[in-house]
Length: 353
Image (cartoon, rainbow, N blue to C red; front, side, top):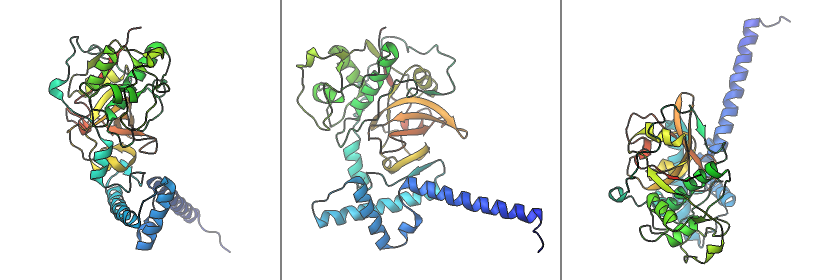
């Protein structure tokens, strides 16, 4: 029997490798997004997918009517996710724990920034990092030990408190060497002069509260309960973490944002009300969003991958959302406000050594 030529053997090897590669990529991608093309081929398969999703996320519905309503929302979200994933290249969406919420429900529950740019304090001092001209190509404060585990605000609109705390935790670790998880609940309960607990707030006002009240308690001493509580001012005997001041990064300047971010984690605001944010599961996000700021988050680094520059953003929607609770947002968009307005309202606390 004649042996096949080397060129034929090479072609067969290439085809075999391509088949394996395509299959492995599909398996990987669809395991990330939470469904397969087969799941969309019939109503029965979508029902099975929904039941599997319910089991995975521990959902319990009070009536068959509510379950039917949630199924219809789930199905609509599933088709939106699939259609988006067919169009986008650099990021992808998935069936996360928010898949049975309509987009309006999601926005009402998980956003909570009260933007008041007119009342935003302009620091009496010059921008601290304005003369820092040479910054590293990449920075990741997680690797430097200045970022606590991803937290979950729940359905309380307290993102402003989580953004504030992440920045304070960061500068405290940089100055003292100790990474201490701090209390968002204290801000929700006690910082009520200009902020509104689960109904939203602003990070600059929260920094002012921490300065005026002599510091912020540890999370272990004042744990988060996902709702507004009574201000526990009797905790004076517990240890607190202090800051000495705060500064606002000049608006609409990615250069200044990166200069500050190269030195410490920042509180930033973004517009997160787009539907893609609800189901973001990975990649460098470069989708459509405006600059109407409605969500407080923390910038904890920046970098590049496959020629795309991004900012690493820590969210407060739990570790099951996005990339284990994080999103990489594209930078160098050519727009002063940056993607989703991330350059519009950044600020950071300071701490004396």
